[in-house]
Length: 269
Image 1: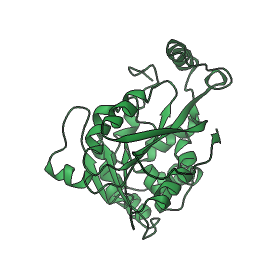
Image 2: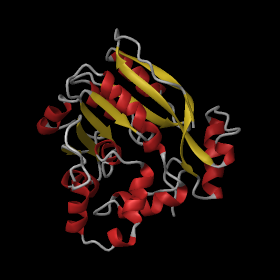
Image 3: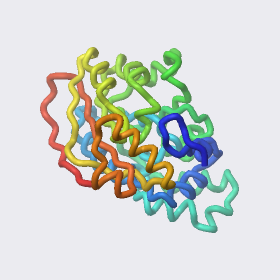
């Protein structure tokens, strides 16, 4: 597979399929599991938010995986087993949508998704993982009036891998309306500092949760070499982490200043 501009293997093709089966079939092979590690942290932030029924926006939501984990009371292993099962792989598109809709449990927070892949957000919406979908590239464009109205409803913004492709341009556009809380899992090869600085100008405070979180295995020795070089250039020590064959992320929580401190446990991934 080709490499993207960050030095990582490009998985672009799995985000533009009409349903999540290529996504799970491909990422299972590299042990992609960070949405599972993120799930309890997102659940705690949802529970801590003062909104009666918080609206959660997943930035870079793809097929609504973070929402599906919450709404289907599923694990990543459950989703891998589901989407790679021969019987499920044999379903036509409409039958897969119907099967997925039956997995969704009612109630809980509302979930919105933001992604530049139209097929991914359309699937997540049709399957019931998302309540609303925003198909947009906020790195490039301001939200239109319809998108801004949705953003104004958001209480909590989450992500599990888009930072580095998504920057402060997108997140400042998301933040300037309702001033939502934010929780982003960021690969150690990317700096969260530009985002934290931009959010600070909007009245946010940022804290990092101690520990690290495994995202996935390197897809090849060449990818690992390139990422180790990137980490070295950024002054990040990969010893015992990326040097052992896995990509790792850190969790950053940004909230409007003056709120009571949150209790989130440290994690060793």
